[in-house]
Image (tube, rainbow, N blue to C red; front, side, top):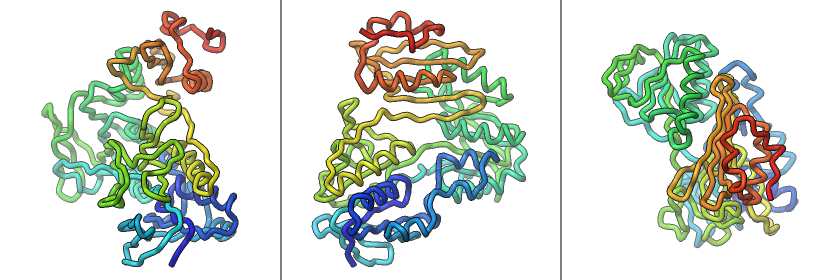
Length: 411
Protein backbone atom coordinates (compact mmCIF):
# COMPACT_ATOMS: atom_id res chain seq x y z
CA UNK A 1 0.00 0.00 0.00
CA UNK A 2 1.22 3.51 -0.78
CA UNK A 3 -0.01 7.03 -0.01
CA UNK A 4 1.37 10.28 -1.33
CA UNK A 5 1.12 11.73 2.18
CA UNK A 6 1.37 9.82 5.44
CA UNK A 7 0.81 11.59 8.74
CA UNK A 8 1.74 9.99 12.05
CA UNK A 9 -0.52 11.40 14.74
CA UNK A 10 -4.22 12.21 14.81
CA UNK A 11 -4.03 15.26 17.05
CA UNK A 12 -4.53 18.87 16.09
CA UNK A 13 -1.17 19.16 14.28
CA UNK A 14 -1.70 16.06 12.16
CA UNK A 15 -5.35 16.73 11.30
CA UNK A 16 -4.67 20.38 10.44
CA UNK A 17 -1.79 19.35 8.19
CA UNK A 18 -3.97 16.81 6.37
CA UNK A 19 -6.75 19.33 5.81
CA UNK A 20 -4.28 21.95 4.60
CA UNK A 21 -2.76 19.46 2.16
CA UNK A 22 -6.21 18.62 0.82
CA UNK A 23 -7.01 22.31 0.24
CA UNK A 24 -4.02 22.60 -2.10
CA UNK A 25 -3.77 19.07 -3.49
CA UNK A 26 -7.22 17.70 -4.36
CA UNK A 27 -5.92 14.38 -5.68
CA UNK A 28 -3.04 13.19 -3.49
CA UNK A 29 -3.86 10.19 -1.27
CA UNK A 30 -3.62 11.08 2.42
CA UNK A 31 -3.43 8.65 5.35
CA UNK A 32 -3.38 9.47 9.06
CA UNK A 33 -2.31 6.82 11.57
CA UNK A 34 -3.45 7.61 15.11
CA UNK A 35 -3.03 5.66 18.34
CA UNK A 36 -6.12 7.39 19.73
CA UNK A 37 -9.41 5.45 19.76
CA UNK A 38 -11.30 8.75 19.51
CA UNK A 39 -11.76 11.24 16.71
CA UNK A 40 -10.09 14.63 17.11
CA UNK A 41 -11.11 16.34 20.33
CA UNK A 42 -9.98 19.50 22.10
CA UNK A 43 -7.46 18.66 24.78
CA UNK A 44 -7.41 22.27 25.94
CA UNK A 45 -11.13 22.03 26.75
CA UNK A 46 -10.75 18.92 28.93
CA UNK A 47 -10.45 21.06 32.10
CA UNK A 48 -13.65 22.90 31.11
CA UNK A 49 -15.42 19.55 30.74
CA UNK A 50 -14.24 18.45 34.19
CA UNK A 51 -15.37 21.78 35.66
CA UNK A 52 -18.84 21.23 34.21
CA UNK A 53 -18.55 24.16 31.79
CA UNK A 54 -18.89 22.13 28.58
CA UNK A 55 -20.48 18.78 27.76
CA UNK A 56 -18.34 15.81 26.76
CA UNK A 57 -19.76 15.76 23.23
CA UNK A 58 -18.70 19.39 22.79
CA UNK A 59 -15.06 18.34 23.05
CA UNK A 60 -15.13 16.64 19.65
CA UNK A 61 -13.96 18.73 16.70
CA UNK A 62 -14.41 16.35 13.75
CA UNK A 63 -16.75 13.56 12.62
CA UNK A 64 -16.05 10.60 10.37
CA UNK A 65 -18.09 12.41 7.75
CA UNK A 66 -15.61 15.28 7.78
CA UNK A 67 -12.80 12.92 6.80
CA UNK A 68 -14.94 11.23 4.16
CA UNK A 69 -15.82 14.57 2.54
CA UNK A 70 -12.17 15.54 2.31
CA UNK A 71 -11.10 12.05 1.25
CA UNK A 72 -8.67 11.71 4.13
CA UNK A 73 -8.02 8.13 5.25
CA UNK A 74 -8.01 8.01 9.05
CA UNK A 75 -6.76 4.83 10.75
CA UNK A 76 -7.63 5.06 14.45
CA UNK A 77 -6.04 2.80 17.06
CA UNK A 78 -3.25 2.09 14.61
CA UNK A 79 0.26 3.09 15.62
CA UNK A 80 3.49 3.33 13.65
CA UNK A 81 6.23 1.18 15.14
CA UNK A 82 9.13 2.23 12.92
CA UNK A 83 10.14 4.35 9.94
CA UNK A 84 12.51 3.54 7.11
CA UNK A 85 13.41 6.84 5.51
CA UNK A 86 15.69 5.30 2.90
CA UNK A 87 12.89 3.14 1.53
CA UNK A 88 10.18 5.73 2.36
CA UNK A 89 7.99 3.40 4.37
CA UNK A 90 6.46 3.06 7.81
CA UNK A 91 5.81 -0.19 9.64
CA UNK A 92 2.57 -0.41 11.61
CA UNK A 93 1.87 -2.24 14.85
CA UNK A 94 0.33 -5.10 12.84
CA UNK A 95 3.66 -5.38 10.95
CA UNK A 96 2.17 -4.05 7.74
CA UNK A 97 4.48 -1.84 5.67
CA UNK A 98 3.02 1.28 4.08
CA UNK A 99 4.97 3.43 1.62
CA UNK A 100 4.79 7.20 1.29
CA UNK A 101 5.83 10.06 -0.93
CA UNK A 102 6.00 12.60 1.90
CA UNK A 103 5.84 12.01 5.64
CA UNK A 104 4.80 14.17 8.59
CA UNK A 105 5.67 13.22 12.15
CA UNK A 106 3.08 14.74 14.48
CA UNK A 107 3.10 12.07 17.15
CA UNK A 108 3.13 14.40 20.14
CA UNK A 109 4.38 13.21 23.49
CA UNK A 110 3.62 10.85 26.33
CA UNK A 111 3.11 11.64 29.99
CA UNK A 112 6.23 11.28 32.05
CA UNK A 113 6.04 8.33 34.43
CA UNK A 114 5.63 9.15 38.10
CA UNK A 115 8.13 6.97 39.90
CA UNK A 116 6.97 6.87 43.50
CA UNK A 117 5.65 3.90 45.50
CA UNK A 118 1.88 3.68 45.10
CA UNK A 119 1.72 5.59 41.82
CA UNK A 120 -0.36 2.75 40.35
CA UNK A 121 -3.15 2.97 42.95
CA UNK A 122 -6.75 3.72 42.06
CA UNK A 123 -7.21 7.43 42.70
CA UNK A 124 -3.93 8.59 41.16
CA UNK A 125 -4.98 10.60 38.10
CA UNK A 126 -3.34 12.42 35.19
CA UNK A 127 -4.88 14.79 32.64
CA UNK A 128 -3.86 14.47 29.00
CA UNK A 129 -6.30 12.34 27.03
CA UNK A 130 -10.06 11.98 26.86
CA UNK A 131 -9.75 8.61 28.57
CA UNK A 132 -7.94 10.37 31.42
CA UNK A 133 -10.78 12.90 31.58
CA UNK A 134 -13.40 10.15 31.72
CA UNK A 135 -11.56 8.45 34.57
CA UNK A 136 -11.28 11.73 36.49
CA UNK A 137 -14.95 12.60 35.92
CA UNK A 138 -15.99 9.22 37.28
CA UNK A 139 -13.73 9.60 40.29
CA UNK A 140 -14.85 13.16 41.14
CA UNK A 141 -18.26 11.93 42.19
CA UNK A 142 -16.71 9.97 45.05
CA UNK A 143 -13.71 12.15 45.95
CA UNK A 144 -13.60 13.64 49.45
CA UNK A 145 -10.08 15.04 49.74
CA UNK A 146 -7.41 15.64 47.10
CA UNK A 147 -3.70 16.30 46.74
CA UNK A 148 -2.30 17.98 43.62
CA UNK A 149 1.36 17.45 42.72
CA UNK A 150 3.10 19.90 40.38
CA UNK A 151 3.91 23.53 39.70
CA UNK A 152 2.60 24.39 36.23
CA UNK A 153 -0.60 25.03 34.26
CA UNK A 154 -2.03 21.52 34.64
CA UNK A 155 -1.58 21.65 38.42
CA UNK A 156 -3.54 24.91 38.48
CA UNK A 157 -6.31 23.34 36.39
CA UNK A 158 -6.56 20.46 38.86
CA UNK A 159 -6.75 22.90 41.77
CA UNK A 160 -9.66 24.76 40.20
CA UNK A 161 -11.49 21.53 39.33
CA UNK A 162 -11.38 20.37 42.95
CA UNK A 163 -12.16 23.85 44.25
CA UNK A 164 -15.29 24.12 42.07
CA UNK A 165 -16.40 20.66 43.22
CA UNK A 166 -15.97 21.76 46.87
CA UNK A 167 -13.35 19.07 47.43
CA UNK A 168 -10.68 20.14 49.95
CA UNK A 169 -7.34 20.18 48.14
CA UNK A 170 -3.67 20.56 49.03
CA UNK A 171 -0.94 21.52 46.57
CA UNK A 172 2.38 19.75 47.13
CA UNK A 173 5.23 21.31 45.22
CA UNK A 174 8.98 20.76 45.57
CA UNK A 175 9.70 24.26 44.25
CA UNK A 176 9.15 27.40 46.36
CA UNK A 177 6.17 28.38 44.17
CA UNK A 178 4.22 27.51 41.08
CA UNK A 179 6.06 28.56 37.89
CA UNK A 180 9.34 28.65 39.84
CA UNK A 181 11.49 29.40 36.78
CA UNK A 182 9.31 32.37 35.81
CA UNK A 183 8.04 34.20 38.90
CA UNK A 184 9.94 36.60 41.12
CA UNK A 185 9.02 37.33 44.75
CA UNK A 186 6.11 39.58 43.75
CA UNK A 187 4.65 36.91 41.47
CA UNK A 188 5.04 34.23 44.13
CA UNK A 189 3.26 36.47 46.64
CA UNK A 190 0.38 36.99 44.21
CA UNK A 191 -0.22 33.27 43.70
CA UNK A 192 0.21 32.47 47.40
CA UNK A 193 -2.37 35.14 48.23
CA UNK A 194 -4.76 33.74 45.63
CA UNK A 195 -4.43 30.18 46.93
CA UNK A 196 -5.27 31.36 50.46
CA UNK A 197 -8.22 33.32 49.09
CA UNK A 198 -9.60 30.10 47.60
CA UNK A 199 -8.84 28.05 50.76
CA UNK A 200 -6.21 25.92 49.01
CA UNK A 201 -3.52 24.61 51.33
CA UNK A 202 0.00 24.78 49.89
CA UNK A 203 3.07 22.81 50.89
CA UNK A 204 5.99 24.26 48.95
CA UNK A 205 9.46 22.76 49.27
CA UNK A 206 8.00 19.26 49.72
CA UNK A 207 7.73 16.23 47.48
CA UNK A 208 5.66 13.06 47.62
CA UNK A 209 7.66 10.08 48.87
CA UNK A 210 4.82 7.56 48.86
CA UNK A 211 1.18 7.23 47.92
CA UNK A 212 -0.45 5.20 50.65
CA UNK A 213 -3.14 2.58 50.24
CA UNK A 214 -3.66 -1.01 49.11
CA UNK A 215 -5.92 -0.87 46.07
CA UNK A 216 -7.15 2.71 46.46
CA UNK A 217 -5.42 5.88 47.61
CA UNK A 218 -5.79 6.66 51.31
CA UNK A 219 -3.16 9.38 51.61
CA UNK A 220 0.39 10.47 50.87
CA UNK A 221 3.65 10.75 52.77
CA UNK A 222 5.75 13.82 52.00
CA UNK A 223 9.45 14.57 52.32
CA UNK A 224 8.97 16.84 55.38
CA UNK A 225 7.87 14.17 56.53
CA UNK A 226 4.13 14.59 56.84
CA UNK A 227 1.13 12.32 56.38
CA UNK A 228 -1.77 13.79 54.39
CA UNK A 229 -5.15 12.12 54.06
CA UNK A 230 -6.47 11.93 50.51
CA UNK A 231 -8.47 9.66 48.24
CA UNK A 232 -7.30 11.45 45.07
CA UNK A 233 -3.79 12.38 43.94
CA UNK A 234 -3.65 14.48 40.77
CA UNK A 235 -0.23 14.61 39.13
CA UNK A 236 1.30 17.22 36.82
CA UNK A 237 4.75 16.12 35.65
CA UNK A 238 4.79 17.16 32.01
CA UNK A 239 5.46 14.91 29.04
CA UNK A 240 8.28 13.25 27.15
CA UNK A 241 8.79 13.25 23.38
CA UNK A 242 7.93 10.14 21.41
CA UNK A 243 11.21 9.70 19.50
CA UNK A 244 11.12 5.92 19.04
CA UNK A 245 10.50 6.32 15.29
CA UNK A 246 13.92 7.83 14.70
CA UNK A 247 16.09 5.10 16.16
CA UNK A 248 18.79 4.33 13.62
CA UNK A 249 17.49 6.92 11.16
CA UNK A 250 19.46 9.74 9.58
CA UNK A 251 17.39 12.46 11.24
CA UNK A 252 18.87 15.07 13.54
CA UNK A 253 17.49 14.99 17.07
CA UNK A 254 17.88 18.11 19.18
CA UNK A 255 17.88 18.58 22.93
CA UNK A 256 14.08 18.77 23.09
CA UNK A 257 12.78 17.01 20.00
CA UNK A 258 13.19 16.39 16.29
CA UNK A 259 15.13 19.26 14.75
CA UNK A 260 13.57 21.08 11.83
CA UNK A 261 14.30 24.23 9.91
CA UNK A 262 11.89 27.18 9.79
CA UNK A 263 9.82 25.29 7.21
CA UNK A 264 9.37 22.38 9.67
CA UNK A 265 11.45 20.16 7.37
CA UNK A 266 13.66 17.61 9.11
CA UNK A 267 17.09 16.53 7.91
CA UNK A 268 15.46 13.42 6.41
CA UNK A 269 14.38 13.44 2.78
CA UNK A 270 10.67 14.27 2.38
CA UNK A 271 10.08 14.19 6.15
CA UNK A 272 8.52 17.04 8.14
CA UNK A 273 7.59 17.35 11.81
CA UNK A 274 4.96 19.39 13.66
CA UNK A 275 3.58 19.78 17.16
CA UNK A 276 5.02 18.78 20.52
CA UNK A 277 7.64 16.48 19.02
CA UNK A 278 9.32 19.30 17.11
CA UNK A 279 12.36 21.41 17.94
CA UNK A 280 11.96 24.00 15.22
CA UNK A 281 14.05 26.97 14.14
CA UNK A 282 12.18 29.99 15.47
CA UNK A 283 12.55 32.94 13.11
CA UNK A 284 11.36 35.34 15.83
CA UNK A 285 13.94 34.33 18.44
CA UNK A 286 16.54 33.13 15.91
CA UNK A 287 17.33 29.80 17.53
CA UNK A 288 15.79 26.35 17.87
CA UNK A 289 12.90 26.00 20.31
CA UNK A 290 10.39 23.40 21.41
CA UNK A 291 6.90 24.65 22.32
CA UNK A 292 4.20 22.29 23.57
CA UNK A 293 0.79 23.86 23.34
CA UNK A 294 -2.39 23.56 21.30
CA UNK A 295 -2.13 26.81 19.35
CA UNK A 296 1.45 26.16 18.27
CA UNK A 297 0.55 22.60 17.24
CA UNK A 298 -2.36 23.88 15.13
CA UNK A 299 -0.26 26.54 13.42
CA UNK A 300 2.64 24.16 12.85
CA UNK A 301 0.28 21.62 11.30
CA UNK A 302 -0.96 24.27 8.91
CA UNK A 303 2.56 25.40 8.02
CA UNK A 304 3.83 21.83 7.56
CA UNK A 305 0.90 21.06 5.26
CA UNK A 306 1.67 24.07 3.10
CA UNK A 307 5.32 23.12 2.80
CA UNK A 308 4.49 19.50 1.98
CA UNK A 309 2.55 20.67 -1.10
CA UNK A 310 5.40 22.93 -2.20
CA UNK A 311 4.13 26.25 -0.85
CA UNK A 312 7.27 27.34 0.95
CA UNK A 313 6.15 29.03 4.15
CA UNK A 314 8.24 29.68 7.27
CA UNK A 315 6.65 29.01 10.64
CA UNK A 316 6.46 32.35 12.43
CA UNK A 317 4.60 32.70 15.69
CA UNK A 318 5.07 34.35 19.07
CA UNK A 319 4.07 31.40 21.22
CA UNK A 320 1.75 31.82 24.17
CA UNK A 321 -0.32 29.78 26.57
CA UNK A 322 -3.30 31.19 28.47
CA UNK A 323 -5.78 29.95 31.04
CA UNK A 324 -8.36 31.54 33.31
CA UNK A 325 -7.88 29.98 36.72
CA UNK A 326 -9.14 30.76 40.22
CA UNK A 327 -10.01 34.30 39.19
CA UNK A 328 -6.72 34.96 37.39
CA UNK A 329 -6.31 35.28 33.62
CA UNK A 330 -2.76 33.95 33.14
CA UNK A 331 -0.62 34.10 30.01
CA UNK A 332 2.96 33.04 29.31
CA UNK A 333 4.01 34.91 26.16
CA UNK A 334 7.22 34.32 24.21
CA UNK A 335 10.35 33.21 26.05
CA UNK A 336 9.85 33.63 29.79
CA UNK A 337 13.30 32.41 30.74
CA UNK A 338 15.92 33.84 33.06
CA UNK A 339 19.64 33.61 32.39
CA UNK A 340 22.93 35.51 32.46
CA UNK A 341 21.97 37.57 29.40
CA UNK A 342 18.40 38.28 30.53
CA UNK A 343 17.19 41.13 32.72
CA UNK A 344 13.71 41.19 34.24
CA UNK A 345 11.36 43.90 35.43
CA UNK A 346 8.03 43.25 37.13
CA UNK A 347 5.00 45.18 38.29
CA UNK A 348 2.12 43.92 40.41
CA UNK A 349 -1.01 44.61 42.40
CA UNK A 350 -1.57 41.52 44.53
CA UNK A 351 -5.08 42.41 45.68
CA UNK A 352 -6.24 42.84 42.07
CA UNK A 353 -4.34 39.77 40.89
CA UNK A 354 -2.43 41.98 38.44
CA UNK A 355 1.14 41.09 37.54
CA UNK A 356 3.57 41.33 34.65
CA UNK A 357 7.16 40.20 34.51
CA UNK A 358 9.10 41.39 31.47
CA UNK A 359 12.09 39.40 30.18
CA UNK A 360 14.58 41.59 28.27
CA UNK A 361 17.94 40.89 26.70
CA UNK A 362 20.93 43.13 27.46
CA UNK A 363 19.99 45.57 24.71
CA UNK A 364 16.47 45.89 26.10
CA UNK A 365 14.75 43.80 23.42
CA UNK A 366 11.63 42.16 24.81
CA UNK A 367 11.80 38.34 24.73
CA UNK A 368 8.82 37.33 26.83
CA UNK A 369 6.23 38.36 29.41
CA UNK A 370 4.31 36.49 32.09
CA UNK A 371 0.93 38.14 32.60
CA UNK A 372 -1.87 37.91 35.17
CA UNK A 373 -5.12 39.87 34.88
CA UNK A 374 -3.62 42.28 32.35
CA UNK A 375 -4.61 40.41 29.22
CA UNK A 376 -5.32 43.63 27.33
CA UNK A 377 -1.54 44.07 27.08
CA UNK A 378 -1.01 40.73 25.32
CA UNK A 379 -1.45 41.86 21.66
CA UNK A 380 0.76 44.90 22.22
CA UNK A 381 3.48 42.82 23.86
CA UNK A 382 3.27 40.11 21.19
CA UNK A 383 3.83 42.74 18.50
CA UNK A 384 6.82 44.16 20.37
CA UNK A 385 8.34 40.68 20.69
CA UNK A 386 7.79 39.85 17.02
CA UNK A 387 9.29 43.16 15.89
CA UNK A 388 12.22 42.83 18.31
CA UNK A 389 11.40 46.16 19.92
CA UNK A 390 13.87 47.51 22.47
CA UNK A 391 12.29 48.76 25.68
CA UNK A 392 15.55 50.18 27.00
CA UNK A 393 14.12 53.70 26.82
CA UNK A 394 11.17 52.88 29.08
CA UNK A 395 12.78 50.20 31.23
CA UNK A 396 12.49 52.36 34.34
CA UNK A 397 8.74 52.79 33.82
CA UNK A 398 7.90 49.11 33.36
CA UNK A 399 7.67 48.59 37.12
CA UNK A 400 4.80 51.10 37.35
CA UNK A 401 1.50 49.18 37.59
CA UNK A 402 -0.29 52.31 36.38
CA UNK A 403 1.60 52.44 33.07
CA UNK A 404 -0.82 51.93 30.17
CA UNK A 405 1.08 50.24 27.35
CA UNK A 406 -1.32 51.69 24.78
CA UNK A 407 0.11 55.12 25.60
CA UNK A 408 3.73 54.03 25.23
CA UNK A 409 5.55 55.42 22.20
CA UNK A 410 8.57 53.38 21.21
CA UNK A 411 11.22 55.41 19.40
